[in-house]
Length: 317
Image 1: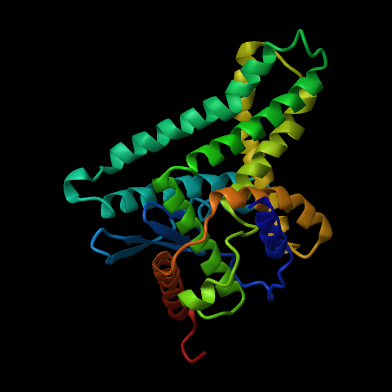
Image 2: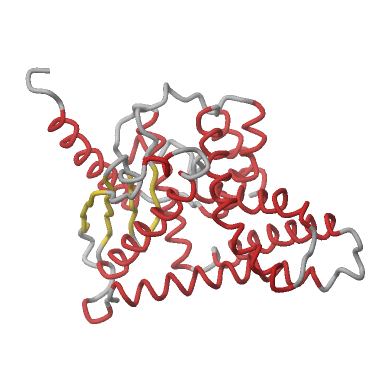
C-alpha cells in the first residue's frame, strides 16, 4: 500500500497541467456530500437517504470587499481561514441535516457549538498540549530551540496518527471518499476534461491546494516560527501558541498559493510532497455516485458564477 501511495503522490505532483484558470476553485468534503467554492459563490450537494441529491448555493459574504487591505499577502490567509471556517460550518450543518431524518436534524446553534468545541479541542491538543508537555522536558533537553523542534515533530506525528486512527471509522472513511471525489472533479475541470464520472475517475485523489496540505504546512511553520523564541513562562507559552495560529495561517496560505502557482518547480514539488503524502490518508477513491454529488456541487458553482459574469458584462459585448 505504501508503494502505491508513493506512486500516486508522484503522479499527482508531476502530472502535466493546463494553463491556470481565472480562479482556483476549492472545496470541502461534508457528511454524505461535497461543498464547492468559487470566487463569489459556494454550493453544497448532499446525497439523501432516498438517494436523491439536495443542492443549494449561496453568495460568499466577505469583509474583504469593505476592507481591501485584508486581501493583501499576510492578511488574506487569515481572511481565507475565517471564511473557510464560516462556510464550512454552514455546509456541515446543511449536510448533517439533509443526510439525516428530520427528527434527528441539528440547529445551526447546535452545529456552531459542536464546531467551536472541536476547534477548541484541536488547539488544546495539537497546539497547546505539546508545548506544555515539552516544557516539562526542559531538564532533559537544555536547548530551548531543540525542545521547540522536538515539540513540533511530536505535533506532526500526533496529527498524522490521529488522521490514520479516525480514518478506520466507516463514517469518516466515507467523508474521505467524498474528499477524493472533490479533488478528482476539480482536477478534471482544471484539465478541461468532461465533468462526467467516467472521465473524472481517471484523475488522482491528491491535489496540491488541499486543506490537508494547508494544515501540514501550518504544523511545519509552527516549528520554524516558534523555535527561536525559546520557552517562556507557562502562561505566555500557552498564549503564544494561540496567538501564533492566525500568523502562521497567513504564512501557510501564501506557501500554498506559491505551490499552486509554481507547481512545476522542483523546489515546490519537494515542499508539497509531505502534504500530498498525507492526503493518501485523508482521501480515498470514491465511487461514481459520490463523484456525481461532487459534480452537482461544482456545476452549481459554475452556473452561479456564469450568471453573475453575464449580468456584469456590458450589453452588446
